[in-house]
Length: 422
Image 1 (cartoon, one colour):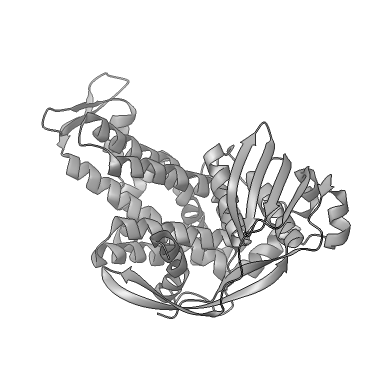
Image 2 (cartoon, rainbow, N blue to C red):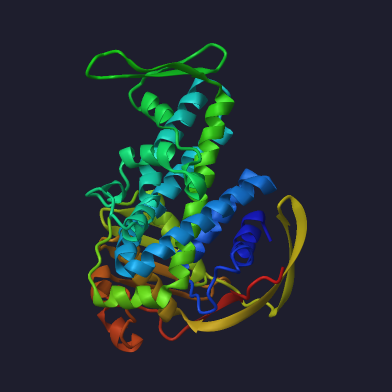
């Protein structure tokens, strides 16, 4: 089993173990929460954080979760609106920032790497943190007796940069934890190009008052390591808040689904990049038991080639991983279950069409692992529009609406894994 597979396998049980005292016995997971947990765990794994740094992330998660729960007691629907409105922004921003961070890790130590680090910090501060703080501010507004205006989110459903500045300078006690890494001076200086890279790799930053043209903040020098430390603090802060979002979602799944089914709650949507679409499809296809052999998406037309998996052996597998830099063995109960191919394909398309948020033509070729079986379906995602968040009608009736369907009644094997025993 490769490292990436090990990380994905142990991510969920490690999350459950870490937050067992906060997870309700009736908690329910969707594929989206599992995807987030696996993504966050991979980030933490690759970063090789110390135990102290892991504790910082978890402390942020617990404080954030408490704030959100207190707000939800006052008005669950108001908190839910801010969560759902920003959920897709979260996924897109996380993917974008992880790619940007990877470029920095792999880059050479030169001016380009410094600029990439500054750009990463700016994007993290301006793009992700306003989204993550939205449910927090809504919750604080609901919980505050005077309904202070400082907790009102902006018209775009996010926290404003002015509010992030207040969080940095004004929050005290436990809430001060959520201000880690917020450096308005560093962000503002880079955004307005008020910086200079020195020969020794340090960066001089300053702020100018646009009304007077004079310094509002005098030049200050940061080393590369100081900027990196600020970025890492903000990044760890973001991870902790995301974990709190996950806890809120899984502990309230039934309530969330009920409200969504009876209320038209808006969701902010920014068009996805091709790479985002491919990541979504690969994740959902894998969950449905397929390997993605080929992907092409252009002009609202999707072409895929999927491969089914061979039947394996039902058994307990021992996987060796690392936890806080210590080696740990994990026991995984593996079972191979048989499902109809057409049911997995249509279920996969229903999820994908909802997450991509635009209608498209699709042509999907399916081949078996042994290359003995080949089939194809072709149609349009308009078929799934009225079933967003709902069960599809009986498959035999629904599949008649496809333009091409040569799948027949063929079955496939899907590998099921139980929670890891740690």
